[in-house]
Amino acid sequence: MNPSSSPFLIYLFLSIYNFLILLCFILRLLFHLFEILVKNLTKAMNMFQDWPEPIVRVQSLSQSNLKAIPNRYVKPLSQRPNLPSQNHHNKHNPVTAAIPIIDLGGLYTNDITLHAKTLDEISKACKEWGFFQVVNHGMSPQLMDRAKETWRDFFHLPMELKNMHANSPKTYEGYGSRLGVEKGAILDWSDYYYLHYCPLSLKDYTKWPSLSLHRREILEDYCKEMVKLCENLMSILSRNLGLQEDILQNAFGGKEESGGCLRVNYYPKCPQPELTLGLSPHSDPGGLTILLPDEQVAGLQVRGCDDAWITVEPAPHALIVNIGDQIQMLTNSIYKSIEHRVIVSPAKERLSLAFFYNPKGNIPIEPLEELVTEDSPALYSSTTYDQYRQFMRTQGPRSKSHIDELRSPR
Ligand code: OGA
Ligand code: NI
Image (cartoon, rainbow, N blue to C red; front, top):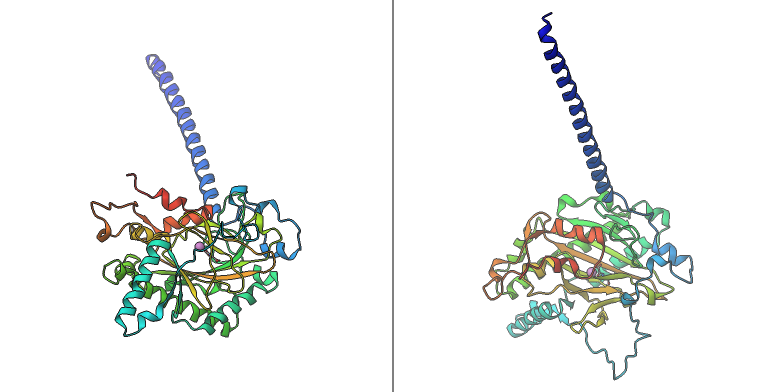
């Protein structure tokens, strides 16, 4: 070997050695970063698969005859309801407001004046209240009663049977007892059942409660009628805006792609109704909601214009319609999605069927260009309903904080 080459060899050897050490170090660092990434991803994914804490059924709590409700359900002082018994409704503090009751029969007569008057009432209600009751809506009272009866029977089944349909935060379909996945959150005093009815691609009968064929048909008929009514209202609302009658429906992705889901809310009786809520203040994240309320037990409260909570007194066989956040955004806030909440009763359980009619999940929702002018610029930035509803699904009901977040800076 040539002696002059030995320092070179040593140098070469040391360089390779250093390079290998550096490479090892970089690989270890990359591996470590990858490990952190996987860990966080799994954590994020689990957030949507599992509830953060064991689920407690509010119905079981109610049936255990507790004198005091667990702390998990006690709302901070500022959020507790002012129950009517504590409220002094006298001439100094009258409760005179009531949400409008609109007879939809006026739309199906030949009387042009009555027809126009009915449209006008709906227009006003959407602008001023965001909430109204409808009667003569075309839905058979028997079907409404049977649908309620079917669900009441479901909630009266033994817990083991109901738990076979326990839901997860991934899709929320099935039997549930909380909205939102934040560990340690203060919960609402209610259980629910949630299912997708349309579009067809999301309808999954394995997520429906196990019911007799007859009951299944009732459920199916009820949802079908709900979709019909929603489609009808969508064209009425569009015409009332002075636009083509299919404009809102198209903005939702068309009839075939629009979403429809049912949430049946079950509010067990509560030993301390003054400390909690059946459903915390929220506005509905979707498009339109049609609520079949419990006629025996009032509970729904709507935030009036002076911020007071107004208890809705359901008219016989009326349905309650309210505008959701997606329509508030599409109409650039001409139609209002109003905050509401539910109070519970010490003496009686309450059951309500909320049907939500929503845009297709992945299309942009933003103020309709026909409604945006120099004088009324777009108030909201674009979003999709899939994105939007993750907020409710992770954080639970939070007043109107989400739609307010999407307000464009002015
Ligand atoms: C809802 C809702 C009211 C009620 O489900 O979003 O507001 O009376 N329900 O149950
Ligand atoms: Ni609601």
